[in-house]
Length: 539
Image (tube, rainbow, N blue to C red; front, side, top):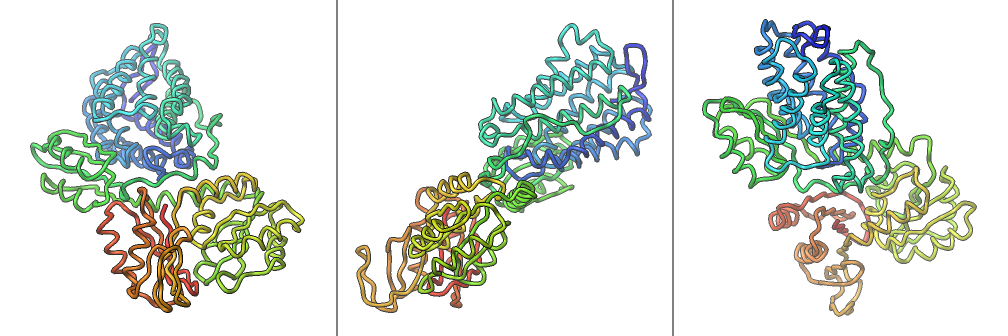
C-alpha cells in the first residue's frame, strides 16, 4: 500500500501511498475501455472497466485528502473509501479485496515479502468470505492465485518490487485460464473482465514500486469477436447499488430480503455501513428496504438492458470500421421499419411488402449499390423470397438470401448482423436466431375464409403466429393478446411489438401482458407498415 524503498522492505509513508495509488489508477485508466469491452459476466453490460476505475478513483481521492499519521488510520480510510465508492459487481468485490489487504497493511510500519504475502492472502480470504456464492473464473480466482503465488517459499525471499512482479505474472496466467472455469466466458471467447481489471491494478502498483513507467500492455487472446458481442440480456433490468449507514445494521436480514428480489446480490460492510449491489426489476423497492434500516447514500441505478445494447452497437461498429465485408439488402414496408433497417452499417432498404413486392431488378439494383463486396438479402416476406434468389443468381458479388418471411423475422435476423463477418457467417448467425424466435401478425380478413382451420369473416381481425392462422374475432385487443401469448410459449424473454399505419391503442395490451409476465421485457416500435396493424416478435 504505502511504500518507501528500503532494503528488502517497503515503509509506510503517506506521500508514497499517493504515488502508488495514482500509478494503479493510471494503469487502470489506460485499460478501461478494453475491460468494458470484455465484460460479459455476470451480465454483458460493458461497464466493468468503468466501475473498477470509479472505485479506484474513490480510493485515490481518500488518500489525496488524508492526513493520517499511522498506517492503521490510513488503512481504515482506504477501506471505507473503497466500500462507499465501489461501483457495480466488480467494484464491490474489489472493495473487499482492498479491505482484506488493508487489514494486514495497517498493522505494519514496514512490509517485506512475507507481509505482502499475508496481505494478498487476507485479500483473497476476505473477498471469498463476503460472497454467498463465490464463482470461479472471476476476479476471485485471480486474487486467490496471486495469494497462492505469494506463499511460495522462493517468492517470499524476493524484494517487494520483484514480489509484485511475480504477482503480475501469476495474475496473467490466472486471467488467461478464466474461460476454462466459466462457460459463459468460453462461449464468448473472452477472459473475465473483473479478473483482468484486478491484474491491471496490481500491474500499476508493481510499476509504481519499481519506478517503471505506465504503458499499455498488449494481451494475447483478448480480441473481442462476434461471440462476445451477441450475449443474452440479463434476467433483471436494473443494476442497483447503494450504501446504508446507521447503527446496528442487520446485514443478514437485508441480504435475505433482497435475495427474493433479484440476483448478483452482494451485501458487505459492518454494523455502521453496508454496501449493497443487486440486479433487480424493482430498484425502488430494493432501496426502500435499505431505507428501513438507516440512511441511504450513494445510490446508483443503471439500466443493464440499455447498457447491453449500447455495448453491442459500439463493438459492432468497431468490428466493422474499415472492414465492411458484408452488406445487407432488406425489404421493408413503412417509414419506421425502413429507419430501423437503415440504422445498420452497410444496409440498403427497398420499400416493399404485402401487395407491393419489389421486382427482381429492384433487388439486384440494391445489391449492386451496396459498397460491400458481398451481401445478405432479407426478403421479409414469403412472396419476395423467389425474386431475391433470382436477383442473387444474377449479381456480380456473392449473395446469401436468408428466408426471413416477415418484417418481424427480419428485425430478429438483422440484430445478429456483423458487417465485418463473411456473408456465410452472417447467414449462419441469422438462421440460428430465426430458429429460436416466434413471429406474429395481426391483420384484417379480406374475405370470408377458413385459414389453417380458423374461420374468419371479411373485415374481422385475423391473428397469425409463424405464418399460421391461430385466432380471429371482432376485438383487436383480444386477437392481439392471443397472438402474443402464443408467440411467448416456450419461455421467451423479450417481446417486440411493431405498430402499423393505423392508429390503434396498444397500451392496455402492453399493460396486461406485462402484468401476466412480470419478467418479460416489452418494446414497442412504430413501423408504419400497411395492412398489418401489429407485428409481434418474441425472443
